[in-house]
Length: 74
Image (cartoon, rainbow, N blue to C red; front, side):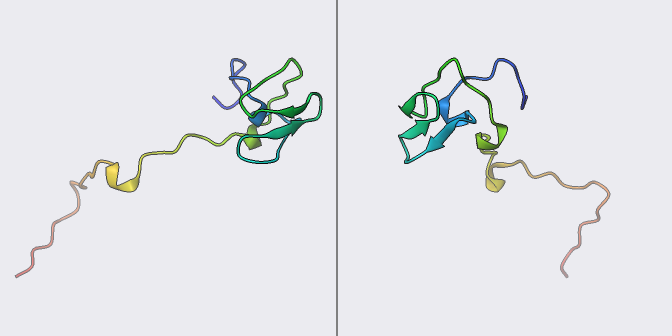
């Protein structure tokens, strides 16, 4: 769920966190912070969370439409 109450708390997903680099950032409350840390003043910002990637198109199963007639090349 997007707004699950049991969402893992991470600074990277907090409204008060500003990323500075890949592995560092700045928290408005605590100052320099790791994106994997958390604190009591965590406020979830759904726009900062990147959802997990879906399967690639070549990994998806291919289904045929039973109503579609297969064309035969003479």
